[in-house]
Length: 143
Image (tube, rainbow, N blue to C red; front, top):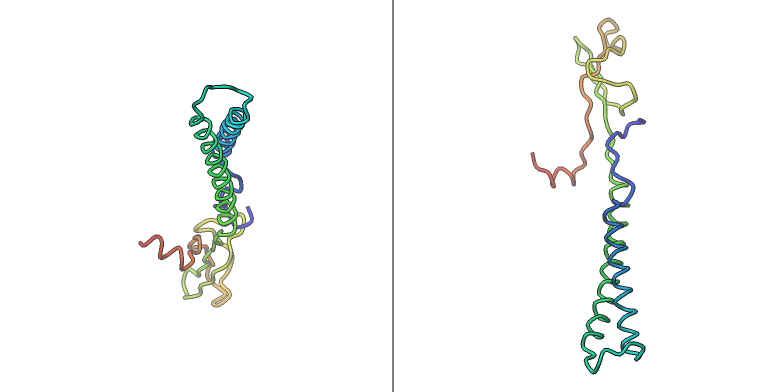
């Protein structure tokens, strides 16, 4: 724990991968079947509408599974880079001394750190631990 406890997931969900591969496999089966019907390897009669339908379905399935895979990867990279830092506020018990720094392992609220560097007598204590919110996130989640 070096400061970023709320790290977003760095992997794609297994259910998304399963759906993409299942769609891709069914699309390939549809393409192979339509190609074999159109080439004359399989004879289903004079109705070639189903072969063209399977061809279109296979191409559409491959396009959709490719799009979902690319978007999942793009979102994963975007989430990985959008981690906000966790900050700790140190404050003196008596005087108005206040310092904000990055979170360190072992920090907790009301932890006594030592003596105040300003008045040198009173105790310095951690009064707040929070995640720093960027301006774009403030607009998206109004309070």
